Length: 410
Image (cartoon, rainbow, N blue to C red; front, side):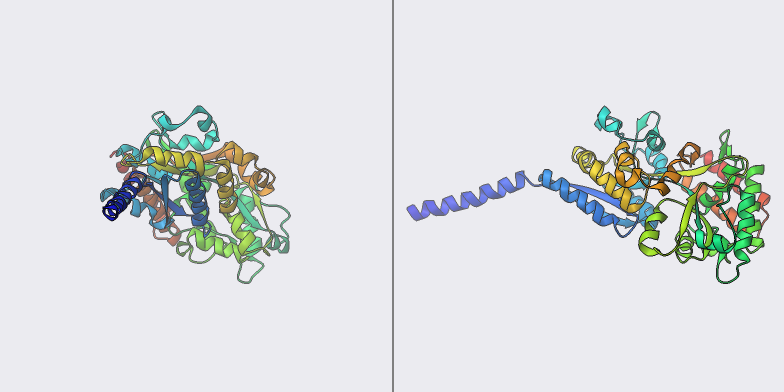
């Protein structure tokens, strides 16, 4: 009898353990992260580890996806009913997600103290109809990088403040001969259009005017012709339409471009990949006005998530903790999106970063509207035609503007 009861007790113990294990199974939160650098995955895994130690009932699953593939992956997952719980996205995609009811409003999860953490300029692009639909996770403004060694060799005393001065300096660098180029122009892949915005905006143009496309304005044509003149006069790298943003930055890291316009992340790359290249950072050159491109990526929660409270808890306690926000921003080379990051010694004392922050009052953001990616692609295709000499600027931009207007009307 005793052996019988022992056996029964053993069976009951196993059953109770299984029931207990099932009752306390961790809630799984799936987090999709865009790969900004080789450090991105480790940063988010560190966040997850810290969070799970404090919240053993929640499992954070980090998935790192190449930025170029991210939008397509999310589109596929959403269509298949397997959207993640939260994901980093390009803020410009958010309008489409809001329109389709995919994005979860976050206001109801946020305390006033949490909301006050953010720098308002970077929160604004994620607000739709007064509702916060995403949180800024990465931010940048753009500035001008210049190679100090090439400037010295060419007898250039200071970085150019205007486009006319930039063109003159690019010609001096070209005159040095060898395998170096005065001014780098991007003409391939994502942000080909954005590289042209610098000239458009500083010449007084805008992307939208009274609800219509503004790319074919006189300022837009002037900006495209300006870039075409650099190409025609041999002041850029040859084959502009073969160079993506990454390709351009590689040339700068090799010391082969005198002047390049890009974001703050290049600073981090220069420290680790090109420590011997001497460079400086200055504002985007002026035409008739000052301007720069302000960009944010956001992290959003999907309305289809069945673990929204746990997902929010991860955002609040880990992803937007002062410790991890500062580590992310410092390692990835972005601008701070929270007050605590901006005050951190690693960032507050960085003179190069100050150059970007000083441009924020003049920053313009791409419109957060549905169909924006298709609109951007349409603009990029028109610019490529101009750069290749396949169409003049007014014709190419005029045709693109007509297509953009039809997209805006959808």
